Length: 361
Ligand code: KG4
Ligand code: ZN
Image 1 (tube, rainbow, N blue to C red):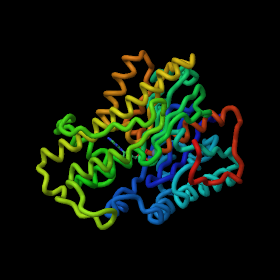
Image 2: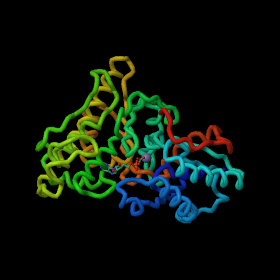
Image 3: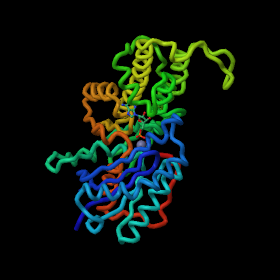
């Protein structure tokens, strides 16, 4: 019996499809980015995103099948990211997945997009690459850092996660994107900050590292965002929408802008590492030590963050699961891969599968 899963992903502004074998081997991985459609608005416009998914999904699925060298008769199950996300965008993927499942008589599996990000590090392209199957049942700490989420989990099974911390305001990716706008860089801002920070001094500006209460595993990035605004534009006169600033980002030299980017990135990355340290310590004190650390989501592509987290994992003696760059941002391979774990134990959904905009986990 085939164990090929066709995964669909439309939760935000990427239309993606992928064919994955045995839950780990990526046979194809196609992503149509809507970047150009949203760029002028400096953020994702939900209505534009939904319409673009409708246009792109069928060609993206056809391309994923062609690149995998298979046709629909060889597919064993249909997976879709059905939560959380922009509701109009999710509905496009969920409806397409239901249509495929019903017309082909194949099992349908709805996957949590945020949880799937923590599965991205398991994916590989070559059949002969070693798979550490035991890693999946180790006591793990998982951190999803993306444009919409900053969420910390404990788990020993990739399909059953317990949320232990989350952002109380902005997601870390949102902070990267807003800082980029303040510096006059494009959208999405994460990769642009990553580049610019390379030329800057991470100690030039002492931005805040918000750690909340001493025991808290939650995150807060809104204070850091505001501190970047003041560093770039000076102190405001007046409040709210009527506030005026001393200067614009164009008044800063290239070096000053690079220093802001590097100092912001250092504060964001250090906040993450300090929280991971806290979570590992708490788990140890509770007699449930962590063996493995897993990262996922767009911000896990950040080079400084990958380096710092690797050093942290080495210091603590933790196994580290970092996704390959191509699987950090939204993709359908992580959806298809995670769904396989439900497919092979027969835990399917039916045609009542809803699209859900927000979930607690
Ligand atoms: O996971 P993702 O594709 O979408 C969501 O589920 O949100 O993450 C997108 C986020 C954006 O905020 C983007 O700026 C950020 O990931 N990002 C990065 C980098 N590459 C993407 N942030 C920092 N450094 C990067 N290299
Ligand atoms: Zn995502």
